[in-house]
Length: 227
Image (cartoon, rainbow, N blue to C red; front, top):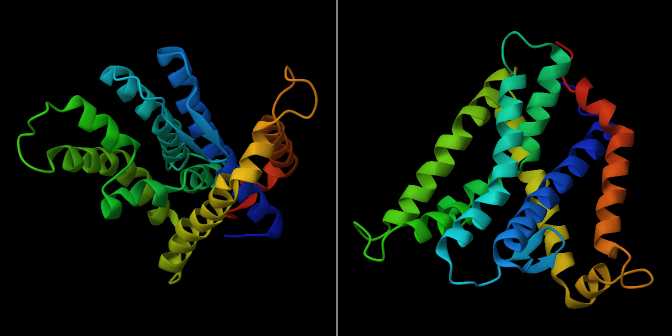
């Protein structure tokens, strides 16, 4: 494994882009189903409260769907019959979904998946915490195979350190950016437009810049593994 500075930049940029795609998916689903896009932050978003539980379910699932699509694409690319370059992309895709963000549901008992399952459950749960347990099991079923395959592909006695670094470092980087973006003055600036109101917001332009920067260094992602 060769974690170069160029790869690290590409990886962190991809983490931010996947998370932004997650939030944009929420916002788009909310707009299409409920007529409003919710409250938008950088790397964060709040749902419009409509009272329609099925709209809430679909909107809540829209974000994690992006993460799981990337994760299972990575799972496929890490198959035995793929090239080393494809495996590099596969491992990166899995870890760029910020798995720890989904796994924190096991600690805080809250996530998009749990919100959706709670809405689908009858008002009288079969037992206390049934919705939370069902949501956690859903997360585990969707995440365990890709994460296990990513871990299994690593070699050497430092594989536990490597997988933990890929889990924790981008998670905390994302958390820092999320808190910065939640600052009211920063958020107001990001949601404003550079000129007339018809122009894209600074946040939309920031997403474009992140994408262009990633494209510039994306080639390094395929060079993570050498064999």
